[in-house]
Length: 77
Image (cartoon, rainbow, N blue to C red; front, side):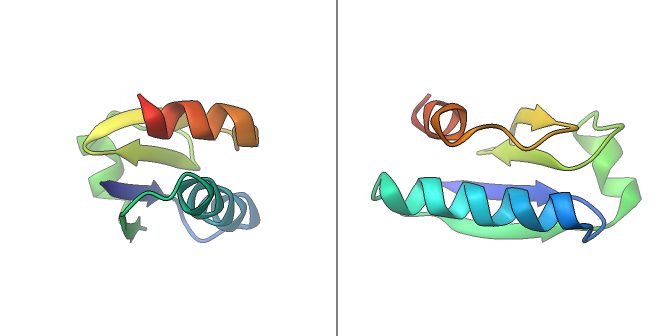
């Protein structure tokens, strides 16, 4: 599984990174993490507001840090 965090490195971006990796760890998932900070690449995913979470190429969340339960659901679907 590939997790991509799109953001500028702000506090919420870091919070999303920590929450997403913690959720993946709790679920016992094998994943690769990539942080994307290039604004031009945000557009590739249709992201206009950060932070954003992309799982296996699919945008799952943008503009907020989802709850732990929501993150687990996103990673399982």
